[in-house]
Image (cartoon, rainbow, N blue to C red):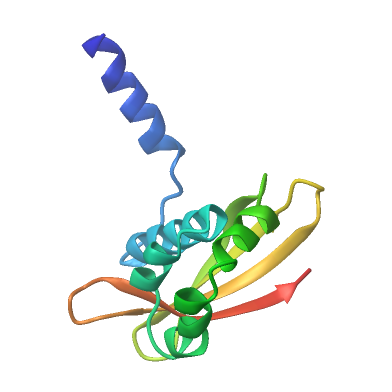
Length: 131
């Protein structure tokens, strides 16, 4: 059994997209953000977002009890693929996600992420560019 773990981990590592510099953490945060959205996990979303996005959607995340079910239904069967990673502004990254829905609709989401003093990336802006 242990012999199978190393090849599996190597295969997973090789299948992950490689990005230069500090992009990897921003990309991982963007991917985790999508996973939380798809799962309707508002607790995780609150941990992954920062101002001004947190100020815009905090009421929705904390007070709308139907929102998790809405997210799960809307993103059921959807997948996300990182399309591009770019520097924007001072110390921020923009991660473009291509979302493919179960019915083959495609949407492009631009996530702007900011690195906090703790070193963690937070999603501070979300913009749907294409649907």
